Amino acid sequence: MRVFFASCLALMSLSTAWAQDGFETIADHAIIMDYETGVILFEKDARKPAYPASMTKIMTAEMVFNQIRSGAINMDTEFTVSENAWRKGGFASGGSTMGLDPRSSVRVEDLLRGVIIQSGNDACIVLAEGIAGSESGFADMMTRHAKEIGLETAVFRNSTGLHHPEHVISLSDLAKLARRTISDYGEFYALYAERDFEWNGVKQGNRNPLLGRFEGADGLKTGYTEASGYGLVASAERSGTRRIIAFNGLDSKSERRQEGLRLMQAAFETFRIYNLYGETDVVTSAKLFMGKTERVDLVPSQSVNIGLARVNRSDLKVNVELPKEIAAPIEKGQEIGTLVISAPGMTEKRVPLVAATDVGRKSVFGRAGEALVKLFGG
Image 1 (cartoon, helix red, strand yellow):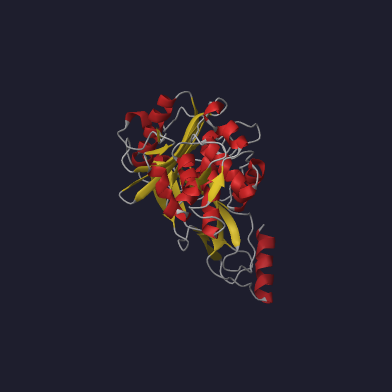
Image 2 (cartoon, rainbow, N blue to C red; image 1 turned 90 degrees about the vertical axis):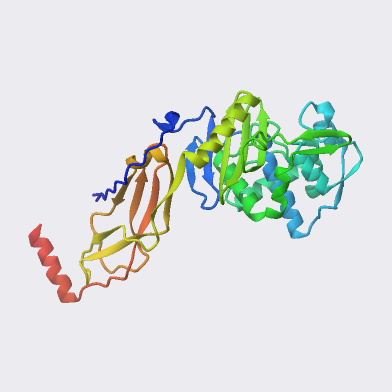
């Protein structure tokens, strides 16, 4: 038996015509995330593993940042460009490249710029081989590290994002990775905002289409393979609020630029975070059997914040699910029921409801009396 508790929030209108029936995107996979809270404001097939292409390089860079932070290497450490890195990632490969010379020695700081700004596959492979001995070994390290930091969908088979059928990560996990990069590696994050980098006399511009086009944009990384389509992980900050977007599956660079601008604008203007309940806010109370008090107040196990398009606020529903019978004794913090939150355009959110206080059992005589009442009362 379920007991339902409904809450209806006041209507808030939005004049933007294209959002009247709910926000949509032409991307195959997409997500908009609030940086401070990690709350998802919008998602479209974002939790399914997908091909990340060069957005993989956010993880490659994270691995290097981590190695520097641990003291294993530093910005001035030099790695040698192998024949393998030159052939697979150099100009002759036809892919994104930093333009490294074979057998040359290159500083980690320069290689990082080659990865982040120029999307150089050769720079990725040099770093991978220098840190792990081989690119496959580095990819295994990437996968293990991803699991350790909670990116459950990530499986890496290389350091570059070049297509491999088993090389996948969800857009949700890519957004989480971007959030971690910004929060945990602030001293390196400024590299993502640099507009260009020159190596061997060749200057290449940062491929992020939001830099210089969207106020506050300062990272992160584009990606493209035939299998993944055109994609982007990006972040911007305005007036102390930061948002992260990630998407892929578009058909061209121009589509990526236009949809990136549109998604980031929507991140700030179309969506907002609603703080529904704090950890001490009583959501409802539950009737008890054999308790010293007839009811116990229920509070959420955590603060409940949701991201939602403003036009969908009036359609938000909050329900409570409780078991048919709840018997004392009850301990404070004991899970009793579930808070279920739903609205158009958002994935249903389920939050445990816990007891706000301890409730002891009635005495033997009290329990006997209640049992009789229950028995004869049906």
